[in-house]
Amino acid sequence: MQSKKEARNQLNFLSPTLREQLNSKQELYLLSKQIKWTYFEEEFGPLYSDQGRPAHPIRLMVSLLILKALYNLSDEELVEQQWEMNPYFQYFGGFEVLQWGQPCAATDLVHFRKRIGEEGIEKILRHSIDLHGKDAQDKHVSVDTTVQEKNITYPTDAKLHKKIADKCVSIAKQEGLSLRRSYVRTTKNLVRATYNGTHPKRRKKANAAKRKLKTIAGRLVRELERKLSHQQRAETLALFNKILAQEKYSKNKIYSLHEPDVYCVAKGKAHKKYEYGCKGSVVLTQNTGIIVGAMTFQENVYDGHTLDVVLKQTQTLTGNYPKTATVDRGYKGTQKVETTTIIRPSKPLKRDNAYQKQRKRKHCRRRAAIEPIIGHIKKDHRAAINYLKGKTGDKINFIMSASGFNYRKLMKKLRATALWLYTKLAENRKCQIQLKPFIQFDLISKPKLSF
Image (cartoon, rainbow, N blue to C red; front, side):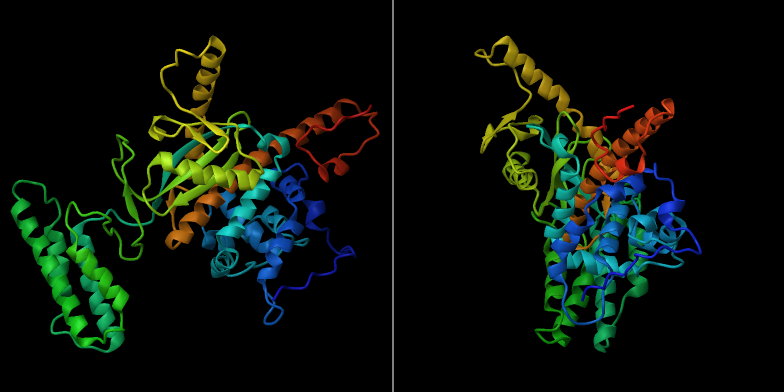
């Protein structure tokens, strides 16, 4: 059930509140004034029951998710370290007095993400778009895809077979079964024998060790199938058998035991030929640089086939379809999606006049701005490596990364406007206006001062 709101009508006479202590020009302070926290309480309120132990406030949990994406923090680092040291985090989370201790357990963020799901995360992204106002209503957008890598080791057959053998031994201990042989020391030595296996002097020994590892893994899996009932660990054993059956050129290969949905993506990069994770698509406004669409795909689909889905999401978040969407040459084959015209770098058509050629050239040059923004999403907002579980974790992490970018952009805008306002006030001391009323209203558009 939801927690009851505390009545804070009376001021604390013993010590000043955080609102009085903190710097009102700090960007996180300003952002907390712009976000409509009641919107999230209305949207996420029906997800709670009327009975049971009171949960943490919705504003607190949403603010933690935003802070996590804003400052590239893990759940544990945010809750256990940064929260108590940073009073601006506490004020952003809705506290009026400095708190000593953690706001919640790190696992509570996991439960809250599961509670609101992908739809709730999209509402956070939509709110980050709405806060930008008219800047987010650009008719021209740029679209590009990237890869969100999963937190897995570089996949090799030897490591997968070693993990299968270790997992079989662990399952036998949990079920109280006795294996004829565990092969714990043998598999460990065989994996070492596979190291530097491309060297001519070690190739023969490494290949023999790989074959032996696969034999041992299959032997342990078959022994478990004999000693376990048909219903016990059926899905796990089926996964093991699929890994043992796959070969070098098999399709839909499994690259990780704990993340079987990961697939391989070849983006043609010189420094990294293959990336293991999921493909994500980003929609960016060309003139203002705001992310108005972000989503991941469960399969390695062709870039041109992602436009229909991601532009529909943009229409859902912003309320209308873009007029044009500029893409790179990887989207070859798609000319128009609904009412959106797809612009792709190519030779000018004979029927195009000088103005049309200039407009296409301008759109294609402006499209290059999406590349560094994707880099910022990865490096600064936790989209480089996804630590969340499963396909749902892929979607949640990528959308929250885009939300973090939008909120960071808004913070910079608020900071610049506040500094501009303070400068104007300092220049003319005869001004009869105060600053605090402006902070409570829209700082995105510069207020008109009357001196």
